Image (cartoon, rainbow, N blue to C red):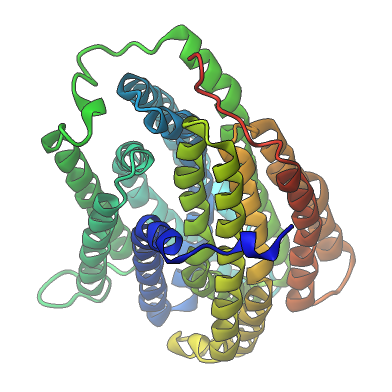
Length: 464
């Protein structure tokens, strides 16, 4: 490949940044506030912080199920918008409503009746019965409040994803910024009981998050319905609720593997973290700190995946295959090089972040967290390449391939590997974590081959 084809001109990067920066800002602020939330609760106690981290790991399964369901329809939405078919965008919007309401009902029932047992799967360690019991109590308390925030989360994702598919990335960003500001302020007031507010601790963190989600959803919904001229799909969106059988069948065919993939991936990550938890409460606390901080840096490649879905998806829908291929190569290059820089910064700053937490009862946590952060920093370029190739394949409708590429690999390779190492060896948490992450090099090789072959160059809305 000509090396010059991997880099664009000023206009190209201006276009990319116009799409990606609002997503980066929204995701970055969200993760930054998650970091501050984590630190605030961590100042209260390690058991509280760990209880919340376990519940958030469980909620991630629901969140990614919603994301997967929406993304399946979103593949069609972006291509419908690329060929200026507003009716098609409207049908994909309705499909998202149906599938997300079903997932919402299933998620609430599962977490409500099995939440305690799921939390207990993560609590291990000898001679720590009091700490483990406290962690369970805080986790249950947090979960019960967070269940009330699942509805606004699902509805906001339906609206915001459709706006992004139509090229509008700023409004979801504005809503996200407003939500995290509300979350941050309420966290301070409700966790610590400031300015006359009750000191609710863990429950206060959950209440703040739920309120912020309602704020975010209301902003996106209000803007969409008051700007129908810019977003014509919303006109008559609720006047009738039918989705053409032909289109629904295609979305289910393409989208179901994607949704199942996201659910299995999130569940696989939950199992993977459960394997790491076998190293005790200190290892779990250190992993929580490092994951929360590294997520703040990971927004770059995560957002570039979304940019690929939007930019390349619209080009595929318009039938511009050669331009889509060239644009995709440049986006992948940009993501990897960006993450080399961000990874270097994270590596240097790693020892500083754990100092913000009160881990006085767990003296090994700061050093463990710093080491895990440095592992994550070194892996960032690998994750960037893996993530962007995954989104490339997904954007072209290769959802069966991405299912094999992502969750099947996690369940058949990474998780069994972690299970064996965590149960049958005495390998400490840092080399255990590093060994599991390096398996992603296999996925990078597979992704490179598939993207280079161009198996993803498809217009999936043609004749729909």
